Length: 209
Image (cartoon, rainbow, N blue to C red; front, side, top):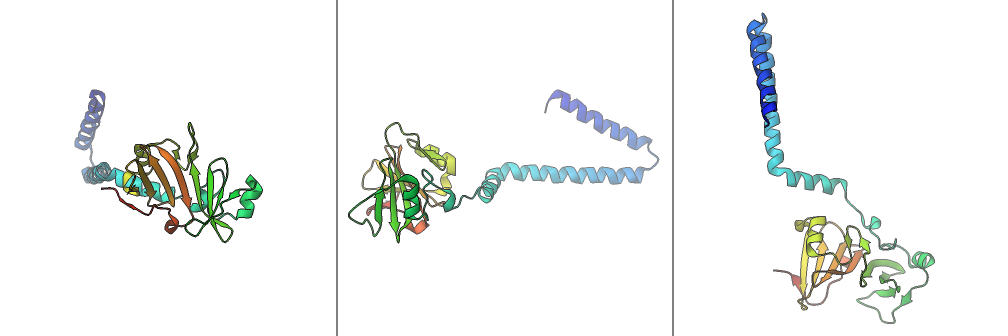
């Protein structure tokens, strides 16, 4: 508290005392003082609760008001759930891989997008980052680090998966069907999934210790 604020509050307090002494209606003054006292206590308790739990309170409201559905997540305006015919109408014909991967038909664009589809509908959309690439998916851009992901989504909302390759890790969001592959602590691959169960994982993987 500054010196000026202290003097101001002291003057208010002394003024109230003076008015109470001079007043002919002391019961009314006592009620007013009691109301102010309890109001101050409630405000103080509320302030203490906010200071102690502000991170939890902020996290609750952020997740409640900023929920992003799968349909709002996209890469170059391509998102899971889109029909292949609509995607190719907008972006041109994609190259179809001859072999299916994990039961999916895979379509590729030269700009780095892979579409994994079943029944002519995109279930997964991947993007492979290129050198000096600043493409952004949701809140994360190519080349971002682990700390960037934790800062954007909070560490407790991210599952970190390790693979046999010690240079690679997968960062999966708990509250969004979205994953990032990092190599040497840099984002090199990003994926959006139609459902949480569609997440792509290597054969040998486990949560990092």
